[in-house]
Length: 140
Image (cartoon, rainbow, N blue to C red; front, top):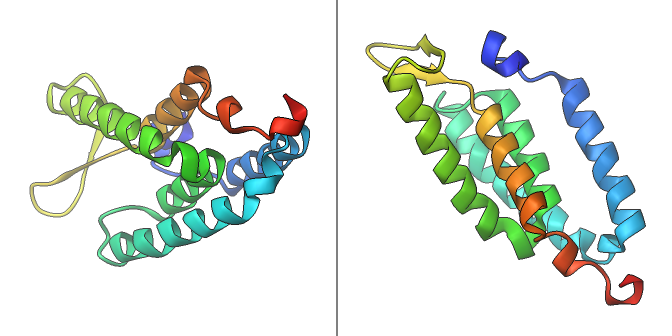
């Protein structure tokens, strides 16, 4: 909601998501794949820094997407990316139709809040059961 209203993503939210991820990994046994998840998130982070350096994406979005890919890991990253594309496309369409808030950027371009699309994609990955399907066999 803060991103929709102020175009800012609070650091407390990122820390909370990381804390919940650690708890989830310990309980579900997904900590076995933590190295791969961290590697993917680091790669995504470096890639997103290119977009950030061009002012195509905000710093909060970089942090949030990095944590989202930590959650999805290598196994669910493609599903998340496809869902993210779907939700971002719907958000852009809604903004163009005046149904969603957008903010004037440089020139004739406009900005949208990216966090709602990231959240919708991540929640959809949870609801599809992608994360549970890859939990440690010892705990299932």
